[in-house]
Structure formats: structure tokens, C-alpha cells
Amino acid sequence: MKDLFRPPLRNLTISVLYMLVVTVLATAGYTAAGWNLDDALYMVVLTIYTVGYEEVHPIATPLLRDLTMTTIVLGCTGMIFLTGSLVQFITINQLQLVFGTKRMQSQIDKLKDHVIVCGFGRIGQMLAHELKAGAAQFVILERSDSRAAEARNLGYQTVQADATDEGGLKLAGIDRARALATVLPDDAANVFITLSARSLNRSIEIIARGEVPSTEKKLRHAGADKVVLPTHIGAERIAEMILYPETARYARDMDKSRDFERTLNTFGLQMDIVVADEAGGFAGSTVAEIERRGNGAFFVVQLKHRSGKTVDRPPADMRVEAGDGVVVVGREGLAAAAG
Image: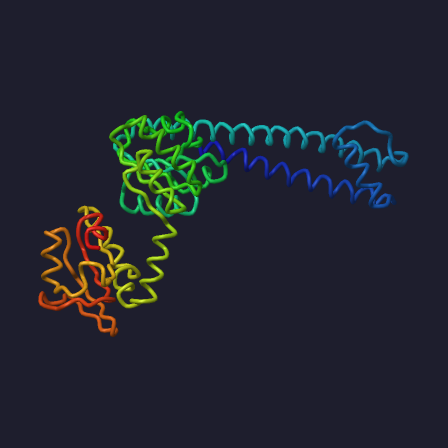
């Protein structure tokens, strides 16, 4: 389609430039004959568009007659060319959109075990970027014209439809998908999407976004397997950076660490920071005791003491005190298991 798109654009550009040149030269000719600029430009526009009003001034000299006839011939020819180029440009552009959408839908219909991302806002864009980096097949489901176009321009397979409508979920291949992430900033919409997705595919994994903690129970009751609270997670990460800046940098900020986390995720593992409080199971225990109580679910890779001392690969007999930050690696959901 790109090869079909370039000639109309080029023709449209040439025709616009051609008409500008004719207009400027014809206007200059009338002004050279003694007309003022306003009258000359008005006469040229009337002549080019063949409106048929009477002349501003009498065409009484051979020079004015020749100039007027030349403007009629060149101007009308240019307008025909400009109109044709504009119609061709609009037609090809619409055909490109129609065939491009149909081709993309055909590709989506062939997908299996893919991921559906409902919403292409801030979190949806970040999620799509990470899924692409992880070579995962996914479909963006977005109802906004501008955001859907942005997703397509980024090369993402996109369905422009309302995710709260079962028809949109079906177009995204809900019956063949392995996972769905609904990340809209509207809790009510996320609950409704979760209900619809669960009714259409009983085995699909659903990860839902919640804005307020009270929504978590509703999302899980609606059928969500996991609920993510961005505000809560953000607050935890900020606290980590304030209380344990070196440990947070070790666990989150480095590019190598991000690659390492992505590798862990492929094996169903994750890395997290757990703060040992007095009421938890970490405080007062040794590293060996903590790992033993975890029954193989996780292991300790770094310890950040309240004093500021950081210990990589802490020895088994090192004791954890209340307020220490502990970096652990283990199966998904380890933060809850470790806490």
C-alpha cells in the first residue's frame, strides 16, 4: 500500500505548487498592467475558479485579454489536476486504513495463547513495551481513535473497540488468549471487563488494575487471578528508595538488574525487597532459618542493615534485625510468602 500512497501525495504536492505559481504570476501580470494588488488577486481567483462574475476592470487591451485567456487555460487545467489529486489522496488513504485494519484483524484471528491488553494509556503503553521486549504475542484493545492509531503506528496489533463490550473482547480473540490484562484507570470498567472476560473464557488468566484498595476484593470476586494496585506499589517503591537507597538501586534501577529480573520471570521467579518488622517472621531469625521456613520458596541474596551496612550473599548464620531490608529471589508471589 505504501507504493500506492506515494504517487497521490506527490501529485497533490505538485498540483498545489503549480496553482501557487499560476496565481502569483497571473496576479503579477495584472498588477503590471496597472491594477492594485487586491483587484488583481480577486480577478485571478474569479478566473481560476470559473465563478463567472464580471471583471473588476474592463479587459480592454490585447495584453489583458492574452493574460486572462492564459490564466483561464492554465488555472482551470491546474484546478482539474488539483481536484483529481485530492480525491485520489483521500481515497487511497481510506483504502489503506480499511485494508490495513482488515489485514491486522486477519492476523489477530490466527493468534493463539496470546495476551490481551485492555487500555493503551500510560500503564498500557509501558506494559506493551515490556511484552514486546519479552517477544510475547499480544493484542491492544483500545476504543480511543488517537490511542488506537498510536498503537498501530508503534507496530502493535490493535483492535479499536470498547473493552467493556463482549464484541470487542471476541475480536481480540478472548476465547484463544492465555492472559488478559485490564489496565484502565476506571475501576468499574475493570470490574466489568473482568466479569465479561471470565464468562467468555473460564481458563484465561486475568490480571486487573485497581485504583483504590477497596476494589481488590471486587476484582477478585469478578474473576481476576491477580490484582495490581499501582498507587500501592508506587508507595512501596518510594519507601524502599528512601529507607534503603542502595538496596533499591541494586534491585530495581540498573539495566542489568532489569534484564536479570526479566530472565527470572521467564522461569516463574521474581526478585523483591522485604522489610523485616517486629511482627513478621524475619526479625530475630538467621538467614538459614528464614530460608528454611520458606521451604524452598525463596532465598536471600542481600541484606541491608538499619545501620546502612549492605551485605551481598549474607552467610547462613547472619541474624536479621527488625527494620532490616532483605532482598529475596523466589517463585512469583514471594513477597506475600516471605512476609
